Image (tube, rainbow, N blue to C red; front, side, top):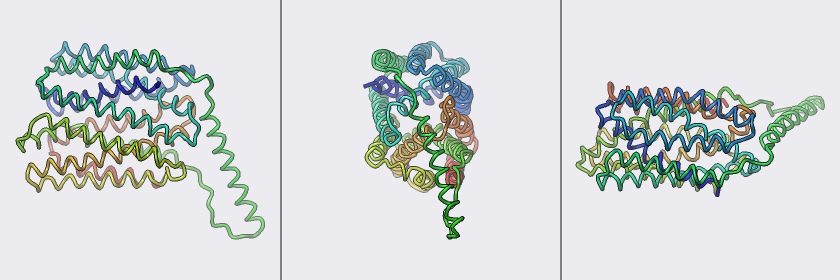
Length: 398
């Protein structure tokens, strides 16, 4: 039940995710200005993510930061309705982004501490799938709003209201864990397991037996680098994606509401991925599957290039199919990496996962619209595919 507030929060941000770039263009901004807004907001949220993660772990109080995130999102989205200046919108959105990430690390820690290590994949999969349904419903609200010709202020009021509901539900339902120890136990178990494997290899060598097993620690730097590269590629691709989809839909003479519908299907692919991850989650296969998921994301990004050789109508169909698959693959990736991050990242650094994602996201949010505006989406898709390949190499090293 404690996840219910997050469900409504994701509804609000699902609606906002596609509406915001279209709103920036509508008030006279450009793709480049939207890229600046997204990248600056993510850049400032990076130290915020680390700070909130440190503070919640140090105080062992998680609920207060979740409430802070939801209530400030509601208030600032309300103030969005009073501005038609891109510069002011950038300032407000940056402030909101810094406060918004206050719930990310506490949410991850709550899941890690409320469930045993064997259930982390399933627990993260359930949370992400449940909230992805909220995101999907938010996109459906976007379809309804555009079909009914809602104004920008009305849509922003809906986003603010959904975050207010999230705050009120979390105020009642979220509870801090009575004891915080599960991540510490996992860290001890990993150290004992490493020492045990070392002793086993040493004893076999002393007995003169051939040893083919190698004793190797995980390369945490490679894991961090892989996260940054994956986030970079994802942001380069998806930050300007609503504009690309809007363009091909308009060229095909299809209704504007189809833009939201395509992203609903993208989110639906994510829901399916989280459902599969919950049913099949296996701690032993988590590491080996990450690289394959990243590589597949790159392959399907390259497939988007084929759309330039097709008619407008077929381009819409191809883009829709690819976005569904990318949503599915992203869900599996997030479940695996979230579980590994809670196992790998030490206490009081719970916000590091969001910091790494934020670094790649900030760079990608700036580069994606910039590349799209000056070099076109063909170049965006090529560069994204190459960066996904680099992320694959990093995770293989890990």
